[in-house]
Image (tube, one colour):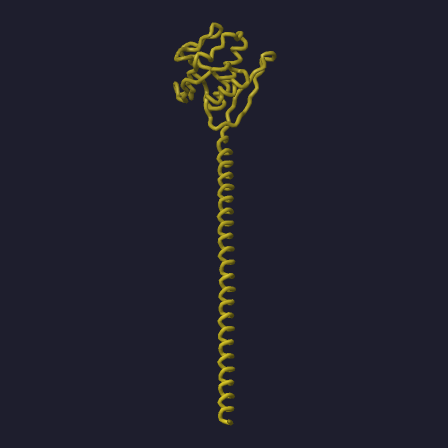
Length: 205
């Protein structure tokens, strides 16, 4: 009887120990699973944050590139108007000439003509056929050939004379030459009121 009681006590103790070990093992397994899940969750958050940062950085870089491009374009636009031309206008009543300056993309006879057209010094349709600076008998000369619209037959002799003075002064001052050789479609300038002969030049007045 005593032996059976001892055996029962041993079996019960063994059962309790095994049960305790089983519970401990289950708890450890659950803890590891929980830790793994927590670790996994942390890594996902970091990855998501990293991706978001990368996306934000990418957007910021795109915005920066756009801003830099805008600055470059603005800079480019500013650089397109660095040159200046001088052109003259006149008052038909006082016969007085006025010197004007204008910022342009390049110094050219065409831009001077354009400015004079805008100020009603030349009629619309006037164009430059050719223009070059050269030396004639040692004198720095601008040789310019205009189209037939340059001659305005509706002008009186005074207005025509003032127009030629404005045109010549504009070219002399802008291109720093001493005289201008003017032709129209390859022929000496001739309007009926004024006619330029071979070897005759327009000079600053």
